[in-house]
Structures are given as structure tokens and as C-alpha cells.
Image 1 (tube, helix red, strand yellow):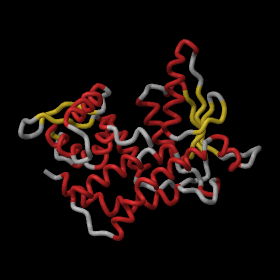
Image 2 (tube, rainbow, N blue to C red; image 1 turned 60 degrees about the vertical axis):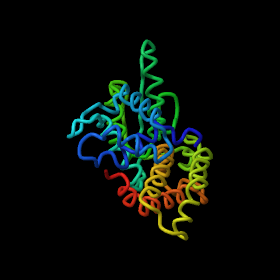
Image 3 (cartoon, helix red, strand yellow; image 1 turned 90 degrees about the horizontal axis):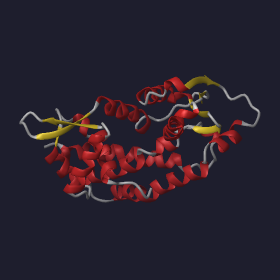
Image 4 (cartoon, rainbow, N blue to C red; image 1 turned 120 degrees about the horizontal axis):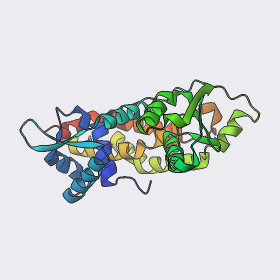
Length: 266
């Protein structure tokens, strides 16, 4: 979790949590105020917004009163919409798997690296060179990602069951680094379970306190459903910490998100 809560990450998290509800572009002054509440100074907000603009995530626009602001690009909206299903919707494994088989010509090997990195970021596990696997419910998001990056000519997708020869739980332990995933869940719990206990036993937070706590919790959490893509529970260790991490985030979301929206509203 060492790279969490960078200014750029917090801006993306803000747009995912609250920015889409704005009536038009988010004014620059509002971004400075709202990220400032999470500990980001104004120069860092402005430089991070510039980088997100260069990446095509944010587009410059003017608000109704003519002030400078930023809105999400169409691709950024699709990214966040896809992310909603992961972050807020519990995974419902069907028992089927999505297999991605790719082949990239040597003269385009940079696309091979891009394919591998994007499949890994989507939560795929590596079965063999050019063969990656994920729970089948990731099909739609995988298609969006490959299409957005113009990588579909190099990939074939298949859906089906694992038929052998190792037990599926043993195979899953090879395809994903379960110890690393468990550690990420435990780090989330170390950071945010004390926050939840404080909410359960202490006085209610102000809207600003709720906003700040929620933004930081979401910024920590939103990576986990990608690293841990909703693997079937019966294929994971009995003491899997992901169950508790998901429960903690869900309760933080319920207690904090709407209250924090009161601070976001101008």
C-alpha cells in the first residue's frame, strides 16, 4: 500500500466517488478545496490534473458561470463505470473461467508487454506464456479494456470450465500469488478497520471528516478487487482475509459516503 494516496490517485478516486454527480465540469477551485481536505496542496492538485489531462482522463471545460474546470473523457467514464461493478458490487463467481490467449508479432513486442500488464491489472493470472485466466464475470470489462487499447486483433477469449489435471484450488494457487493478495487485504484492514471501530464507538463524524475518511478508504480499497478478481471462495484458504476486508469497506461505504457528500456540495 506504499503508493496509495498520491495526489493523482486521490483525484481519480474523487471523480469515481463524487465527481460524476457534479452538474457539469468540476471547477478547479472545487478540486483544490476538496483535495486539500484530504491533505493535497494546491500545486500538487494542479500538476496532477495536468498529467491526467495529458493521459486523456480529464478534459478541460468551463462551468456554467464560466470558471475553469475539468470533466471526464468518455473513456474515463467507461473506466469508472467498469470499476463500479468491481468496487461496489460483490463478485458472483459462476464457476466458469475466462481464458485469454494472445500472440503478438516480434516486431510489435511492446504490445506484448502492454497486453501482459493490462491483463495483470484486470486481475488475470498467468497460466503459461500467452495464456491468462480470470473468473468469467470479467468478460465485459476485459473486452472494453482490450478494445480501448486497440489490442483485440492479438487476443482470443474463451469461456469454460477447468477440467484438469491438477485440482482447481492447486491450479489457482499457481496462477495467482495468494500470499501477496492476502497481505494486501491485511494492510487494508490495518489501515481502515480502526477507523470503522472509531465510528462504531465514538461520536458521529462531521461531513468533512466523513468525506476525508471515505476518500482515503476508497483510495485504498479500489485496487483490491483488481488484484483479487473475485476468485471462488471454495478455492481460497479457509482464513482468507478478503472476506473481512470487504465487510469493513462495505460498512465504511454505508456510514461515510452519503454523509461526505454534504461536504462536497458547493
